[in-house]
Amino acid sequence: MTTQNAQNQNGIITAAVILLATAVVLPALAKEKEGYSVVGAGVRMHTEQPHFADRPFGKGDLSYGLNYQWQEEKAFLQLGLDYALSISAELTDEQGNPIEDSVNSILTPYLNLVVKDGLYRGGIGILRSMVDYDQQDDDWTPIYWQFLLGVNLPIVMAGIDIQAFYVFEGWDKLSDFKADDIEFGCSINFAF
Image 1 (cartoon, rainbow, N blue to C red):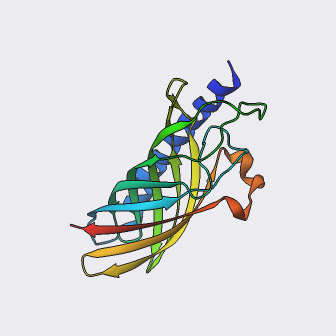
Image 2: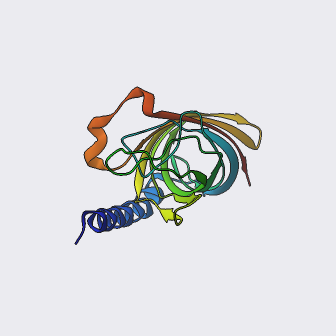
Image 3: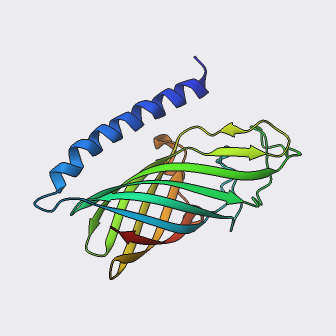
């Protein structure tokens, strides 16, 4: 079994564990209130992470996204899809050598489990991106992860989320943390 296949299998197993834990945690956190649906749209500013070659964003690249949330009193699940155009990162191979190619777009589905306390939000997410290259075949990245922290500013039946994201390749890479790797996003959400 190759390292790539092993990473994908570990990612799938971890994703299944997170989904199972979510199915147990959300009902436990919900006391008397029933859940409700929220839809949102937002923008995210990415950073360049040269050590994360499978995720070819450049500093300041933007993605635009839509999401659906099932919210309970203390936590929620967020399922979303981000779309990025005009990617500025220079592509390299596994040895760090430049590749004569460019990225047309990146499509990223994600699932976040978020705990909330008043205005504050914190959670973890699982992501996988489809990279549309100009010359190479389109390719899915391996599964990767994100921590998120933020605030929600409520406005009647809507809210504005301002969040910071730390994206990482795998749990063994957490020690590679750099403040420059933090990404920022903002979205507007409507409850119904």
